[in-house]
Image (cartoon, rainbow, N blue to C red):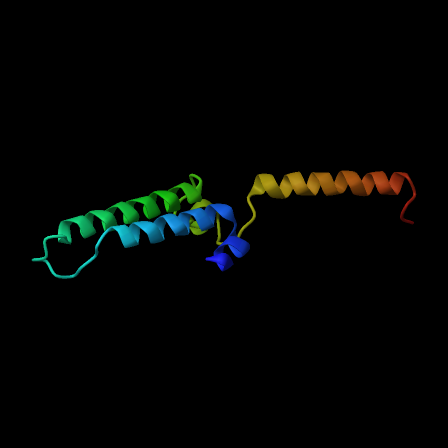
Length: 104
């Protein structure tokens, strides 16, 4: 647990302690006829729901699988707006340097 705290931070540490505590609190068994099977299954469903919600939130509105081939002309292509914005900025800086005689 100390490794989680030092490597990933306080939020990951609190989450891991929470998950570990719930795993200990809910008796998990593979025997369907046990009287506490439903309680263990409820705990697992709760932990899985919590983990999926955390994963969905971590995406920040981005799609799970990005398909750049469908949004650009070819895979890995720079969008035209980005290219021309970079080109005009670079051209402006180059012209400024030439006017100031920084380059011969």
